[in-house]
Image (tube, rainbow, N blue to C red):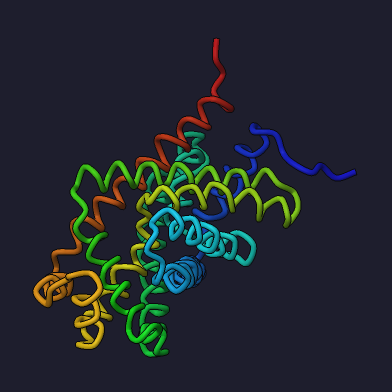
Length: 278
C-alpha cells in the first residue's frame, strides 16, 4: 500500500532530488515556469483584495484574505511553477554538494525576474479588466492604500517580516512535499500560508502584484480621489508611489525572504535531518 505521507528525512531527501532538477532546467523552461508562478501568486493577491477591500475590521479582513490567498501556492505546487521564495530551499542541495553555488544563484535570479514578469502581466490585465471599479472605485483606492503601506515599510521591519513570511512559505512547501495525495498537499499549504497572510508578513513575489497594482491604480484620477476620500491619502502620496521610492522596501523584503527560506528553514532542516551528529 502506498504511504500517505513521507517522514521528515524523506521529505528533505526528495526535496534535494527535486532541487537538482530545478538547478538544471533549460533557461526557457525555467523562465516559463517562473512566469507561471508569478502569475499564480498574483491571482491569489487580486482575489484576496477583492474580498476584503470593503471590510473595515482588520482582523476579519486578514482572516478572509488568509482563506483565499493560499490558492496561489496551491497552483504553483499542483500545476507547476518556479517560485523564488520556495526555491530558496535549494540551499539544501547546495550544502549537500548536489548543485553548485553558481547554479543556485542562476536559478534564483532567473526565477525572480520571471516571477516579476508573471505578476506584472496579471497586474496589467486586472487594471484593464475594470476590476478596480468595484464599489465605485473603492477597490482601486484600496489597492493604492495597500501599495503605499508596503512601499513605506522601514528596512528592519521589512527584513524581519520577510524572514517570518518565508519561514511559513517554505514550511508549507515542505509539508506539501510530505503529503502523498492532492488533499493532503492542499491542507498542508493552506494553514501556513493562511497564517502568514493573517499575520501581515511580507512576501516579495506577492508584492510584485500588490505594489505595481497600486502604481497602476494611482494613474487613474478617480481612484486617487477615492483614496483621499476613504483613507486620507493625498495626491502627493500617490505621486511618490509612482516614483522609484517603492523599490528599497521591496528589496529589503526580498533579503528577508532569502534569509527566512535559506537559513531559518533550509539550513535548519538539512542540519536536523541530514547532518551526522556525534
